[in-house]
Amino acid sequence: MTQLVLFNVFNGLVIGAFYALMALGLSLIINLTNVINFAHGGFLALGAYFAYTLEPYVGFWGALIISPFFAALVGLIVERILIRPLYNRDPLYSLLLTFGLAFVLQDSVRYIWGAQGLPLKVPSALQSSLSPTLFFLTGYRVFMVVLVAVTVAVLFTILKKTRLGMRIRAGTLDLEMVSALGVDVRILRNLNFGLGIFFAGLAGVLAAGMLGLTPTIGDGLIMPSFVAVIVGGLGSLVGTLFGGILIGVATGVVTVFFPSASEAAIYVMMALVLLIRPHGLFGEEGGTKL
Amino acid sequence: MNTLFDFKNSTSTVVVWAILLTMPLWIGHVDGYTDLGTRVLVIGLAAMATNLLVGHSGIMAFGHAAYFGLGAYGTGLFIKYVMPSTPLGFIVGVLAGTLGGAIVGYLLAKLRGIYFALATIAFGQVFYFIAFRWNSVTGGDNGLTFQRQPIHLGFTDLSLSSGVTYYYLALAVFAICTAAMAIILRSPFGHTLLAMRENERRARFLSIPVNRHLWIAYTISCMFAAVAGSLYGMLNNFVSPHDLHWTQSGDFVLMAVIGGMRSFWGPLLGAAIFVALQDYLSSLTDNWMFFIGVIFVLVVLFIPRGFVGLLQRKTS
Image (cartoon, rainbow over all chains, first blue to last red; front, side, top):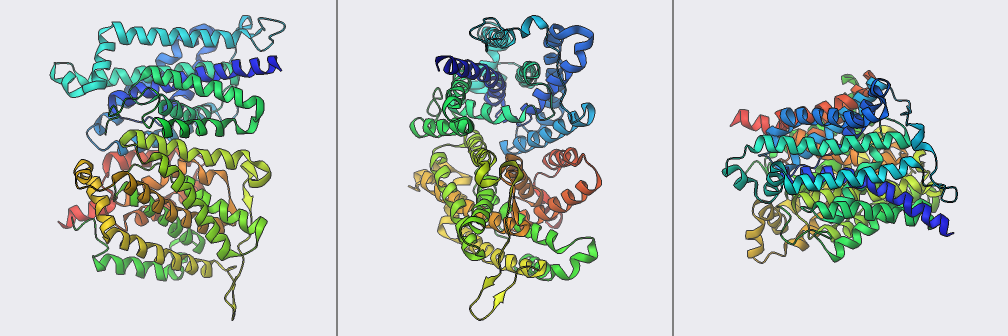
């Protein structure tokens, strides 16, 4: 029993790491630009399939590093051409646009790489179990959690220490003021969008290594990531991170007792959070932009 | 502001009703079929219900497929398992959707803007997962098949087996719903929604209980969505989790935008265009999703005010 619980808690942690990666990207984009990126799951799939295509040439490690950058590049172009004209309009329009983009990305992936599931080759060193009693601690899963932790640490360092990061944080609070101080907001929003998509791409490669590739690979991850953003509260990346891991672990724990209710559980949790703290766990009163 | 209340403009209303009443007569001649007409009507009602919030009240509701689907599932489950009665099944479906909307609306009423939109999306997905997972009752991914029943009127039975009869039944319900929507929008309540859309802070200062109004508006809108869902379920004699999926919610909002969010009949026009295009594209290519996505992008970039908006610009 202990082992079963441990197994599912660890499983939840792995899932939570995915949610957190996805949700951090979403949150970055929402905070600075008020755009809810529905196409995030599509970008995740794009990252995963780029890795599949690159893997024969550069190996798994190369693909892991390069393909998120390719996904981010697509993100930069999409932001520049399609999303930039919408910043001054009602957020409804950017929402609808990314909605359509999600369809376009998913169907393009299906068209290019086919609807059948494909495997992503993972180095054999990562596939073995690390401990004979705790069979579920495969190298890949542990590696994944560690990699996500490192990536998140790097992100927070970038945001705290670099000029770009400081501008992003400042822009989250008051974009107009940042613009008035001579920062080119258009470039800032563009880079920030790319950064968010980078996270989606990375999540895609990692997910592909664990689950294999299908065009709908992002579908199951996008909604819980929205929930993670809501639970954490808008405007707080720490909250988003916490929300992602929290609902991941909660899913794992509920799976032990009611496997079929694991998805419903995260929504119950969201409902409870909104009842008690309408702005999310880390969101501030009035911090949500109207 | 007369653009908003163009249902006062009797010409457009007369034209809409002339088209709707004669639809079964001519739809065959334009490469359509009666059930396609019924689908436009029912989906159009759902789009109008969504637009009650999105267009008329400025509330970003992105989860209306949930209440649409609840209406369909409520009706289907009742007819299949409890009692084979169309009117009772309809009522149960509408109640299910309205109740779902009231519960979610209560949780959402304090939220605003982008946070509100996110929460409607996320909550919309709850019912999808329930329908998808609760295999033994809902049929899971395979969906739920049932059969709409004749209506006993006392003196005679109204058989609904023909598509045309069902079209006119749906049209009668549609008429009642749109009349109710028009009355709501003209009422003091409707005007406070407008006031909240234009300037919520000012509305608050006028001691309008904005959160409660938002909740009520959300519930009413969900009720109309559930009516549409129930009719849609009985039209197909089938419900699948896809009817609850967030992609469906986005379709409703897009239809409102295509037609024109600030107009009363706009969403119906949008639904007609969207449903016809979807029907046509899916018969033409397997990659119809790609083209639907492109339509989303093009509409947002080039006709954000919808076709009604385009027409108004031309005439003014």
